[in-house]
Length: 190
Image (cartoon, rainbow, N blue to C red):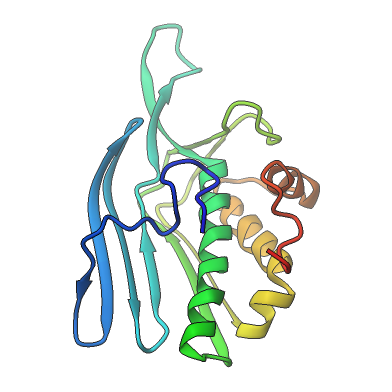
């Protein structure tokens, strides 16, 4: 699928060198792009596990300092785009693997204590937030059919729970405004 956030041309991005193991396909690349550095990794196995990792930290101008310094931030809209894209790709994968039952969805964001969540230019979100937790972990179990019929509700719930880790009770209208910017509100038919 297309990467509407714009980091890559597709999600998950293929680098042309997938590695095959006995029961999975994986691909990885070290990324250095727009202040973001780290391993981009995905793995898909025959049992339905779909794992994706991407560095979220980016360098941004420190708005709290009069000097021209930068600070590490996590881009709010990147998290929303990746969650949305991950859920859509999961449905496509599970259709191909003929998986129809319960799906466990887990999102982990490590080492976030003291980090700021920053907004992209023109973002519908308020300014920025600071995390007081070391790790944010959100898990939920849903039926594969719900990933299609209730994907927007599931996505909103995951986003709200992640943002609680940044001390923000985000409103549904704000999430919808962000998704509508990329024509992603009608998720059941995309």
